[in-house]
Length: 87
Image (cartoon, rainbow, N blue to C red; front, side):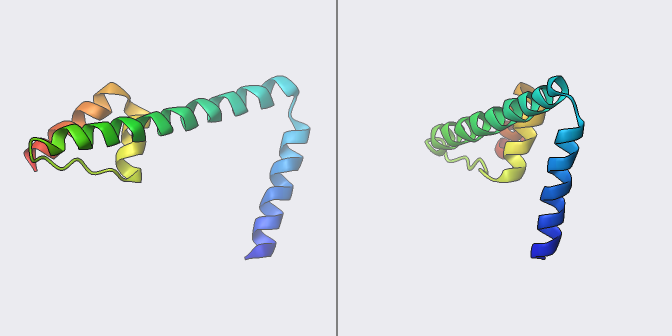
Protein backbone atom coordinates (compact mmCIF):
# COMPACT_ATOMS: atom_id res chain seq x y z
CA UNK A 1 0.00 0.00 0.00
CA UNK A 2 2.83 2.41 0.79
CA UNK A 3 4.39 1.67 -2.58
CA UNK A 4 1.13 2.52 -4.36
CA UNK A 5 0.87 5.82 -2.50
CA UNK A 6 4.49 6.63 -3.30
CA UNK A 7 3.96 5.85 -6.98
CA UNK A 8 0.83 8.00 -7.05
CA UNK A 9 2.60 10.97 -5.42
CA UNK A 10 5.60 10.62 -7.73
CA UNK A 11 3.42 10.46 -10.84
CA UNK A 12 1.40 13.46 -9.64
CA UNK A 13 4.58 15.50 -9.11
CA UNK A 14 5.88 14.51 -12.55
CA UNK A 15 2.53 15.43 -14.06
CA UNK A 16 2.74 18.86 -12.43
CA UNK A 17 6.29 19.34 -13.72
CA UNK A 18 5.20 18.58 -17.28
CA UNK A 19 2.35 21.09 -17.18
CA UNK A 20 2.92 24.81 -17.57
CA UNK A 21 2.67 27.21 -14.63
CA UNK A 22 -0.55 28.80 -15.81
CA UNK A 23 -2.37 25.47 -15.94
CA UNK A 24 -1.02 24.34 -12.55
CA UNK A 25 -2.09 27.64 -11.02
CA UNK A 26 -5.62 27.28 -12.41
CA UNK A 27 -5.88 23.70 -11.10
CA UNK A 28 -4.79 24.70 -7.59
CA UNK A 29 -7.14 27.69 -7.70
CA UNK A 30 -10.02 25.39 -8.66
CA UNK A 31 -9.17 22.99 -5.81
CA UNK A 32 -8.86 25.80 -3.27
CA UNK A 33 -12.24 27.24 -4.27
CA UNK A 34 -13.93 23.89 -3.69
CA UNK A 35 -12.12 23.37 -0.35
CA UNK A 36 -13.42 26.76 0.76
CA UNK A 37 -16.92 25.93 -0.43
CA UNK A 38 -16.77 22.60 1.41
CA UNK A 39 -15.73 24.31 4.65
CA UNK A 40 -18.45 26.92 4.24
CA UNK A 41 -21.06 24.23 3.53
CA UNK A 42 -20.18 22.45 6.78
CA UNK A 43 -20.52 25.76 8.61
CA UNK A 44 -23.91 26.32 6.99
CA UNK A 45 -24.98 22.76 7.88
CA UNK A 46 -23.92 23.25 11.50
CA UNK A 47 -25.83 26.54 11.81
CA UNK A 48 -28.86 25.00 10.10
CA UNK A 49 -28.68 22.01 12.44
CA UNK A 50 -28.60 24.28 15.51
CA UNK A 51 -31.47 26.47 14.28
CA UNK A 52 -33.59 23.53 13.13
CA UNK A 53 -32.93 21.78 16.44
CA UNK A 54 -35.08 24.41 18.15
CA UNK A 55 -38.00 23.20 16.03
CA UNK A 56 -37.27 19.51 16.51
CA UNK A 57 -35.90 18.88 13.03
CA UNK A 58 -32.64 16.98 12.56
CA UNK A 59 -30.45 18.08 9.66
CA UNK A 60 -27.67 15.55 8.95
CA UNK A 61 -24.14 16.93 9.05
CA UNK A 62 -22.06 14.44 7.09
CA UNK A 63 -19.75 14.39 4.08
CA UNK A 64 -22.52 13.63 1.59
CA UNK A 65 -24.60 16.60 2.71
CA UNK A 66 -21.51 18.79 2.60
CA UNK A 67 -20.64 17.66 -0.93
CA UNK A 68 -24.22 18.21 -2.12
CA UNK A 69 -24.13 21.79 -0.85
CA UNK A 70 -20.60 22.30 -2.20
CA UNK A 71 -21.50 21.18 -5.71
CA UNK A 72 -25.05 22.52 -5.97
CA UNK A 73 -24.79 25.63 -3.79
CA UNK A 74 -28.06 27.23 -2.65
CA UNK A 75 -30.27 24.63 -4.40
CA UNK A 76 -28.29 21.93 -2.58
CA UNK A 77 -28.92 23.63 0.76
CA UNK A 78 -32.61 23.92 -0.10
CA UNK A 79 -32.79 20.23 -1.05
CA UNK A 80 -31.11 19.18 2.21
CA UNK A 81 -33.61 21.35 4.13
CA UNK A 82 -36.60 19.89 2.27
CA UNK A 83 -35.37 16.33 2.82
CA UNK A 84 -34.79 17.05 6.53
CA UNK A 85 -38.25 18.55 6.99
CA UNK A 86 -39.99 15.73 5.10
CA UNK A 87 -38.19 12.93 6.88
